[in-house]
Image (cartoon, rainbow, N blue to C red; front, side):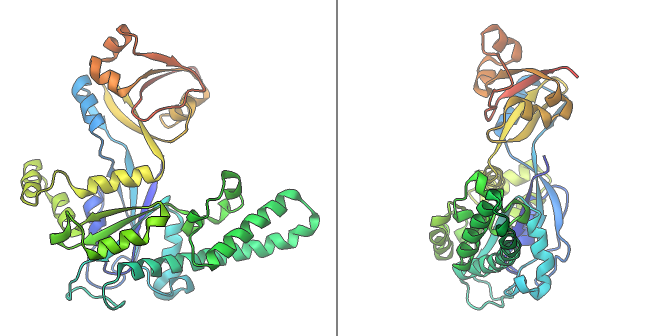
Length: 366
């Protein structure tokens, strides 16, 4: 599944430093000047999952394949971006293409790092980005609203329903609120699906703090957390520079020693990546054999045939049954054969809702 999370924020808040830390396939230039990232850099990030390693220890496969998310480093937005300021239209278009937003906000003092927005104020910084995204969405909704209004005279019930949803969105955006807070139903969202609204995307906030605050947070990160309480959003507190240093180390032993020095059990990046994954309502199921143990990404609520399709479309077309073992059962009994012998291997049909951690094997016929 091609899943993307885009890193956004004002200039010089630590976006490219964070990207360098999380990306396993690309490195962005992290420089102390505006627009150092002109084209969006992209990189594939492995999603940390202890279950994958545990299954591999039991099966001893030839290779291990984790699931991944594509991370896009989008250049810094500025006030006025919705009107084209600072290459704004191009950058807003890049945000439109991602599935979720990772919003990096500066929560530290450093007179050596340029800042045009005045004193450090994470809440104000968040509002600047929010406003630009809302204004762009307002423009998109207004255009479609005008087109739909002209079609109302036909008396079509579907057009009328679509008009009402668009009107509701327009009024909500005019109040300076994000579409994701509106609580639209699945049916309502069909009216705006073609607009790919920026403020409808799920958001994870990264409070980039100073080294002294990486475990506890500070007044800035606390203010940010308080400001997003009504958004059903998560705030991850981390020091992007420290995370980038950990990621650059080739030796696992060096990384462990470095983390021990900073009293870290694991990189904060792990929480960031797994939180981004969950933000998209994604689940993981596994296939486990001597050739490979692999993690597969699906959406919450998918049934067995849909889950099979991420391996190959033929698996869904010719789906017959799925052999399913719960992860905990696989670990307890130690192998597929032992699970089968102890009645822990189930045969499920087309209506089975796949659960997070299921170990699966599909029977199909093309």
